[in-house]
Image (tube, rainbow, N blue to C red; front, side, top):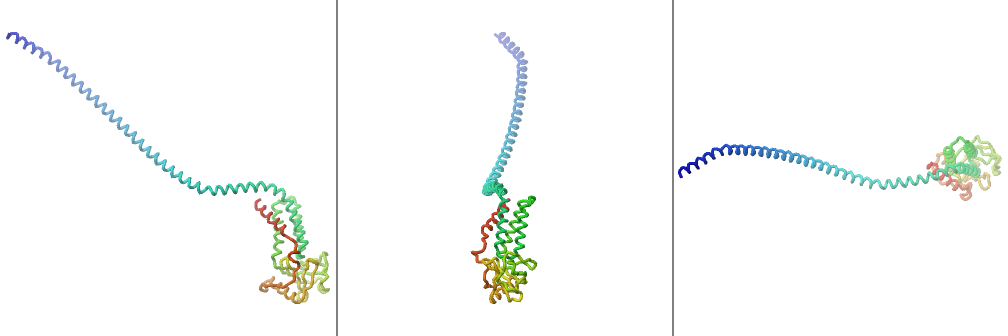
Length: 310
């Protein structure tokens, strides 16, 4: 039995001796495997860290872009509010400009018709002007008729533009209209064969006779006074004779002493030699008898408006 025990012990020792290298090999292999696993784990961890860092960088970049987009959006919203307020303020002006453009278009449409009618209108104004001068008080008549003659020659000149002709015709009418608001005095000749109160260089006219003039007043130099279109008078330098033009009778009629004194006052007032005051003088024509200028004045005003539109 002892022998058997020894043999078993010997076998155990042999087995242990044989198993030691194997165990060592297995241990070495296990150690190598653990090292490889640790290295692999380390690489995976490093890759994970790098991926996490890259992802964080992307997140940070996205946040920065988002903040920039938000800031840009806020700026656009502020600009939109400003544009909305500006458009609200601009809207009434645009409406007014649109209305003005509509009016201009209507005026342009009518302008063609006006230009076609303008030559006839100008001719009508000149004809009325001649009729007016011939029917008016006989002051500066040669000068005024010469103005009408020049207008007729102007209209007959094909090289003169309608604008220039319109300016000249309107200027002549305004001059005539101004005569009705003037207080004027001048020295000239009064003649029994003339009904005109022109300047000293004026020649006698055969339009009518002044039967009421005395023989001493023939071709005498006198002082004339015109009060608008209400009165036309003359007074000799010595103040002994005076007359008033009576449109209804078409002649000069004498003034009495009191009227001549009033006329002398009027002459001095017109020459700024006396303060203005009320004069008591007979009129040459009543307002109801005076030639009407209302239609002609309206024509002048309308032509002026058309001139401005053109």
